[in-house]
Picture 1 (cartoon, rainbow over the protein chains, first blue to last red):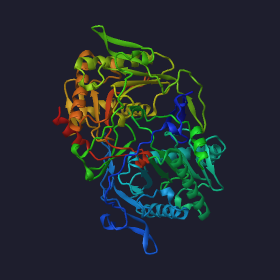
Picture 2: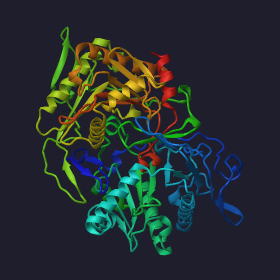
Picture 3: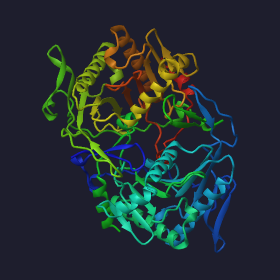
Length: 318
Length: 318
C-alpha cells in the first residue's frame, strides 16, 4: 500500500508508492553522451582552468588538483543585505572544483581505496580552510555524475561551494538535532543509524560505518553513509574511521553502478556548520526520476522504489 | 553581481547568478520524442483509461474528459499513522487525470480562450468536489509538459492529487501569510503583486490579473500568474476575473513557447487549503535547468536568468 513517510529530521514527506513499485531492471537508464573534444580537466590542459589552489603529485604527475570554478555561483564581493518583501543577502563565498583523477574516464568509486581516501581528505581540508574565512558560514561539498545529474563536464570532479549563509535545509537539520537532544540527551542521527542498521533498510556496515536506504527516501535507490561515532565534520574522522567510511562509499557506489549500469547520480556531504552540531553523513541520490509539478508544488516526492527493496538490491552487489 | 534572494513567503533562497546570466538563445532546448503508437488519451481509446468521472461534450464528441489515474500516487485505504523516528501517515487520497483536448498534438495554451477557461472550470470543480471528502485536506492541480518535465504521455493533460495532509510547502505559505496579516492586516501576496507589477519584473497585467517573474525565481523564466483580488481558490473567481486569468495564462505560455520553442514546463496552482488562507496563484516553472547536488543538498537554487531579464523577454512576446 502507498504510504506517506517523513524524513528523520525535516518536515519533508515522501509518498512511498509500493503499489507501483519498480525493480532495477524497470529503469531504462539513458545517458546522454558528452561532446567529444579537448577536456579542461585532463592533464596537459591545466592552463585552461583558473590558477590552481593545490594538487597531490605522485611520481612527478598530479593525481588530484583543485582550483576555483571558472563560472562561480558565488561572488567575492560581500554585498550588504536587504529585508522586507524583497529580501536579499550576499552571495559572497567561494566555488571550487576538485578533479580527483587524471584519467578522463575514471569514476570516483573506481579509484583505488587509498586514492579515494586522499580525495576525501582534500574535501575535509577544503572545508576546514574555507571555514577559516570569517565571511563563510557553511561549506557544501558535492558531486554530480552524468549530464542528467547536472555534470556539465564528463571528467569526474567534486564541487565545493562556501557560502555566507547556512542553507536553510542544513539549518533545519541542526535545529531538529538540537530539539531531539534537548528531549533525550542523545543525537537523533546516532539513534537513527542504530535503528536502521537493525532494519531491512540496512545496506552495509562494519565496525565504524553504516549504510542504509533512508526510511523516507526521496529517490529510487537513495542511500546514506554515516560514521557510527558522532562526528561533526569530515576532518574529525580517525584514520581507521576514514578508511572504513571510504570503503563504505566505494562499496555502495560500485553496487549502484552494477545494479543500474552506472546511472547518473548526485551526492553531497551534510556536515555541521561552524556553529551547530549535525552528525556528519553523505547522502547519495541516484538520478532516475524527474522532479515535476507535484514535487515543485508540494515539496513532497513520489518514490516508486521502497527503501526496503532498494537495500535488498544494494546488498546483492556488495 | 551574484546575489542571494529570498522567496516572498518561504525560507527558500536562490542565487541569482547575474555574472553568468544567459539569454533565451543560450538555451539549447532538447526535447526527447515520445514513442509513436496508440495514445491512451486520444478519442477512440476511452476504454483504455479507468472509468470516466466526467466529460464535456460538444456536437456529440468530448472536448474534455477526466478519470482516475491508472497508476495513482495515492491510495484509497486510510491507513493509520505512526510517530517517532519512523513517522508515517496515510497516503489516502485521489489521483486524477484531466485530458483537456481531444487533439493529440494540441497544447493547453493553443486551445481557444473559451476552451481553456472551461478546463480551468473543471479544475475548480474537481478541487471543490474532492475537498468535500472529509479525509482530504488539500488538492494540488498541476501540469507537466514534455518528457524532461516528467510527462510520461505526450497527449496534453492535467493531474489532480488530493491528499490527506496539507503539503508542508503550502502549509508554510499559509503560515507566512498569517504572520504578515497579524502584523499588517494585509495579505502578503496582495502587497507583493502590487509591488511587483510596478517593478521591472512585471510581465503583464490587465484590470483583474497580474503576471510577474518572481524576485527569487528558482528557474530561468519562472512566472507567476495572480488574480488582483484576494481570492482563496479557483472557484471564487467571477466570470470576468476567470476570463482575465485564463487570458493571462494563455499569453504568458504562448510567449514562453515563442521565446524557447515550446520548452518542457511544469505549472501548479497554489490555492488555499480547506482551512487556511492563501492568495491563490499559478506558478509556471520552465524546465531548462537540472536540479543537482547543490540544490538537493541545500534546498537552494542557482538561477542563471535574473527575473528582471526574464520579464523583459516575456514582454516582447506578449
